[in-house]
Amino acid sequence: MALFAPPRPSSPRFRNRRTLAALPAVVLSGALALSACSDPGASAAGSATAGAATTAGRNGVVYNTSPDQQRIRAEKVAALAAKVPALIGSDGKLTVATTAGSIPLSFHATDDKTPIGSELDIAQLVADKLGLELDIQVTSWENWPLKTQSGDFEAVFSNVGINKDRVKLFDFASYRAAYMGFEAKKSSTYNIRGADDISGLKVSVGSGTNQEKILLAWNKELEAKGKEPASLQYYSSDADTILALSSGRTDLNIAPYPSTVYRENTRDDLKIVGKVNAGWPSETLVAATTLKGNGLAPVITEALNSAIKDGSYGKVLDRWGLSEEALPESKTVTEANFASTRTGAAQTGASK
Image (cartoon, rainbow, N blue to C red):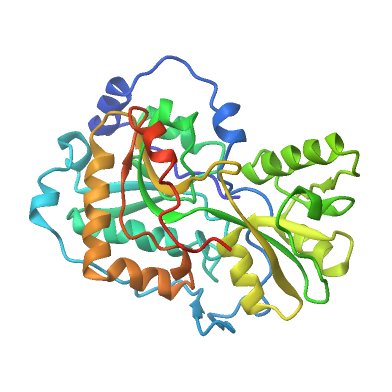
C-alpha cells in the first residue's frame, strides 16, 4: 500500500488548520480503524487481463485502467463555491485522501503510480462543482483518520462507511450504498445469506475490517447453535488472497461488493455467491468524510446532489459498473443526526 504524500508543513493553511482542528488525543487505530467499511484486505487483486490499459467486462463495462482517465467532469456552481469554508478553499484546492487499494473503487493505474477509480471520479465531480482543483493524496487505511483530524486531508473518498464511532470525530456526505460480497470459484454451489451458510468453510478476510467483524459475529451465532464456525483465513496481500481462492485453498472470500463485481466480470473462474450490508446487522452508506464541524460536509452534500441531478454522478457509476449502488440523494450525516438516519440508511433497491 502506498504511503500518503508528505504534508506541506510550510503552508500557513495547514498550520492554521492543525491548530483549529485540535481535538483531544484519540487512538483511532482501535474503534475507528477496526470498524472499517473495509478498504483493506482482499479487495484489489485479480484481473484476467492484468496490466492491460482496458478490460472488457461481461457486464458490458470497459474498465479503463490506464493513467489517461479522461474523467467525467462537471461545471462549477458559483453558489456552491461561495459556501466552501474559507480556510479550505483559500488555496483553490480540495485535498482528498484515498487508499488506492480496491479495484474499481480506488487503485493505481497501469503505470503503478497514478491513483484512479470510481471514488476519485466522484471526488472530481465534487471538486468541479465547488470550483476547486482536485489534489489527490494516497495514504494507508490506518493513516486517514489521524491525517484528516490533523487537517492534512480535507476529505476522504475511499469506501469509508458511516458508523457510530466515526461520527464522534467526522462528518459525512453519503454517495453510495455499502455492501460486502462473498465470492467463490465458479464451480461452487454456495449461496451465502447468513451465518448458517458459512459453517465449516474456510473464508478469507482482511484483518481489522468490517467484514471481519461480520464474520466473527456470525461465528458466535454458529457456536451458540452448536454448529462448526467458519475458519477465517488471513493473507499478507490481495494477490495471495485471490490465488488461495482460485486454487481451492479457501472456499470463500469476502470483500467490498464493487471489487467482487469487477472480478466476476473480468475473470473466468470466480463468481459472487452472496451479499451483505457492510453495516450488518444494521445498515450503512459509503460517504465522503470530513473533519467534524468544519462546515465542509454539507457543501459536499450539495455538490453531490447537484451531480446526481445533472446526471454526471450516474455516468461515473455506470462507467465503473456500480450503478446498482447509486443513491437517489446525498445526505449529510453527523453525530447529531446519526441515530435518525440509521432507519433510512438503505436508500437503494440493490439488496440481493
